Amino acid sequence: MKVEHQIRAFEQLLKSYDGVMPLHRHLFAYFKQNKQMGSSDRRWATRYIYSYFRLGKALADVETLKRLAVADFLCNETSSLIIANFLPDFEAQINLALADKIDLVKQNFPNFNLSQVFSFDANLSDDVDRSAFLPSFFIQPDLFIQVKSTHIQVVINQLQANGIITKEIGDTTLALPNGTKLEQVLTDPRLYQIQDLSSQKTGAYFEPNKYDYWWDTCAASGGKSLLLHSLEPNIELLVSDIRENSLNNLQERFQLAGLKKYHLKAMDLLQNNDQILHHYEFDGILLDAPCSGSGTWGRTPEMLYFFEQYKIENYVKLQKGIAANVIKYLKKDRPLIYMTCSVFKAENEDVVTYLTNNFDLKLEKMELIKGYNSKADSMFVARLIKE
Image 1: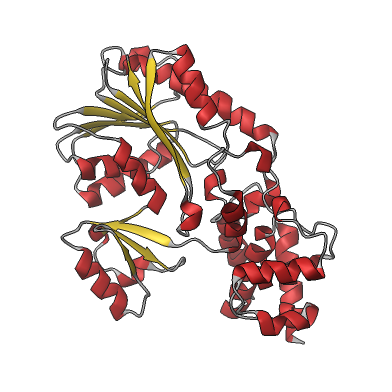
Image 2: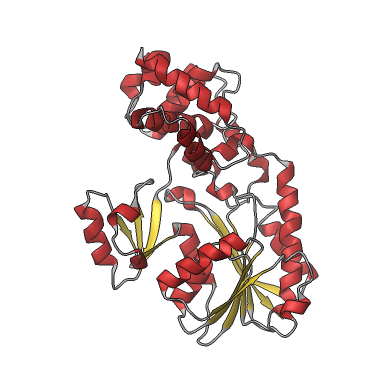
């Protein structure tokens, strides 16, 4: 039977995954190794395993396949053989609103508890609306792109010509279905940048001036630098990261974006870098700090299942250590922009309190950008001024 084939494929895939590698990368390697799986097999196995992890630790005592059926019911608007075989009474209700689906699951599984989906509830920042945040894990986030306002209609026309549903958000942002193969649709990669909506919103805190010199400390692939440059093209940039491969990707993105006025340095910011930076003073510093990524777990739901509590404190130590080593290079009266893609208070508000208590920094403003209401990631951003 076809359902038995799907079950076997799911169980083998689940058994192969230990949470060490991001799930999307594991899937790429797994399907490459198991070439006997056709496109339909890959599609259903991917749907099932993402649905399974979106349930977090809820219903942990329920048999695996019935638990998968619950998860698949909550996460999708079309039925599946798993739902039809293990929850046949739910199949006709597949198009219910999410809140009604959750109520139906609670009626049939009295032990179902939303707080067990995200089992780190006690660590959340105070601004998180739990009633909206917890159900958001059953919803696949959108793909967001930033486009120059002068080119946005060209991009919209190309997307719509290929049958892609496009939602315009402001003058420079488009929301698209997740999984859209942009490289197959948009012929000119210079027209857009992939960047989550909440990440784009952090730009409101940068406030660069013409001819400023800014440092993007943990630049990764350069998304925040590109956002900064879009706000003020006449700035100079130092970009750094501990990972040289990230800086290589960054250079490719900068080239496509036409960003040329920058310096590149591979640095471990937990070390003393005075020999490299002894004469540098910056008009602004971006610190998009390494973090738990808990604000992005809607995209990486495997973390709901595999993340461990002790790692939060490890990230906090890393964030404080990096901040302590970069603040001294900031000019007086100029901003440190502290950011994470976390929803944990310890990584956000508590780190800001540590910085204002231990360094000559004054908090100007901060915000938890709540992406869970917009099918986007959630991010924290704070603007601190050196006194």
